[in-house]
Length: 272
Image 1 (cartoon, helix red, strand yellow):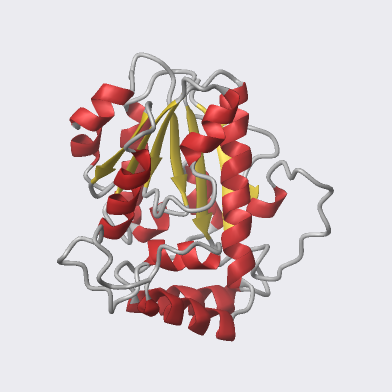
Image 2: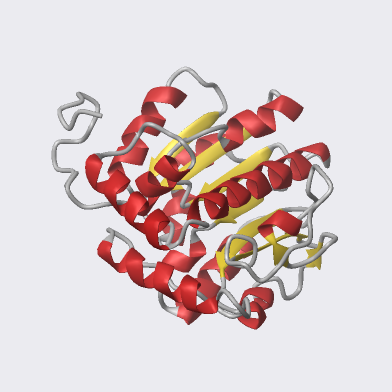
């Protein structure tokens, strides 16, 4: 993609990889730059499983959004949404309920610019260019307030995004703040990288270390810490599992400790 593409904000450093654009490349998207592709290929060369890791996460998100939509949830707050790659949350939700409303929250400026382009003609969906860590700003934003009614249940989506909040207490408090803003009957959809996989922990730590060269470093956390985010919520069966294990559409082969399977823990839970 040309760095002179007209929709790219002029102050973007296209020579430094962005996790959102690297993820887009891993999923087969085209909204990325040379630096993103080089970072992704470097990761693949050292850890061939990272492409599957991205795909498993995206598939989990699709199944989770469908699950919520089939239970009457028509509002989605997608925090740290990244590039609108592959099938996006509004497309997933609107397949079930065409009247669904979705707010994407993302700070990566290329992702925001591209989202604005594709959402301009999509009623019921909008993007807010903001840091998800600024919870009060996000919740009070005119974009959010115009599209979402916080008197009705909302699915709060944190798919592979909370691990970019490096301080553990800040990350936990962030999840609590967003959940406090939505009423009973709302859902939390979350996936988070972990280094608890017995055979994969060293490789996961290597992947996390590689992220330090991008615009947003990540951090892996324990299963116990990730599970604590769901305290007080009603976990949907099968609970906190790896992304490939969460209600798979096809019979699941044995999940081993290989990093592609045992790196991202995921769960969906309902606020009682």
